Amino acid sequence: MRVPRTRDTSERRQQISAMVRQRGSVQVAPLARQFGVSMQTIRKDLLFLGQLGITERSYGGAILASAVNVTSEPALDAKRAVHTDEKARIGALAAAMVASGDSIVLDSGTTALQIARHLPDDEEITVVTNDFDILAALTQKNRLNVVMLGGALRRKNMAFYGAQTMRALDDLHVDKLFLGVDGFDVERGITTHYEPEAMLNRKMVEAARQVIVVTDGSKFGQVCLHRIINLDGVDDLVTDGDTLPEGIRAAADRFGFRIHCPN
Image 1: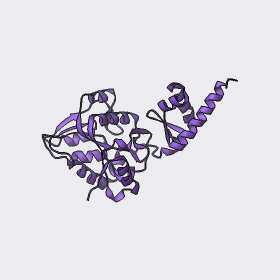
Image 2: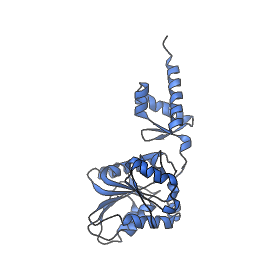
Image 3: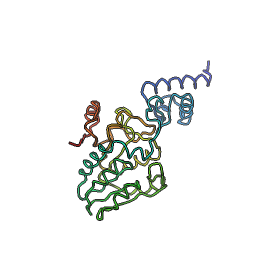
Image 4: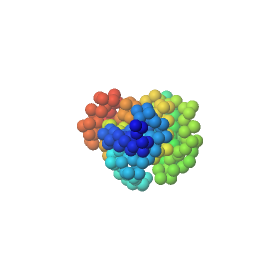
């Protein structure tokens, strides 16, 4: 006897629910192959589970709702006011990793702003950014080459996003990307609050030979809604050694990235 379609749907959703609870996240394409249904059908399943409060939407799939422990993005003024000493030390150390002749991307954010402030004023260094505050800091240096990515201004963090910003990266190849993060989790990777930022950051990763994550210790163990990359896509981590959890060094061995901490 043919199993009714409603029963098929119910059983599949129960199985997907169990999988996301066990793994923490699921992806649309593998689920579609596993269950022999279209990706549109899986998206409807994930939408249904989201309405039940089980999952939250993420890039290419869904994440367990209870795993998203950073629920809202702090205001820019609040970001500027916290962990200022740590960010300054991280910025100075990261800036020291830039050599004459390098081309680099500075992601938006208050930690990347500290890198901009500490960069040497060298005409052989080119800096690409989408952050208005970083642009303002770089204009104080007379010899640095600066490339501003255009687009639509998001006033919440004073950075530019959108199709124009993405297209500007299409023909760029840089030596180093300094990537700020909202969340850094061993299993769920590098995450952020804002989906267009995650999309732009992945484009930056594609353009860079070396991906350097810069973050203070408050971001460790945090998971935001939108994944940028997994930790196996990270080459270097610059962070404050005073707040480095034990698991981060184990993760560096596991995924092959180097850790740099200020003295």
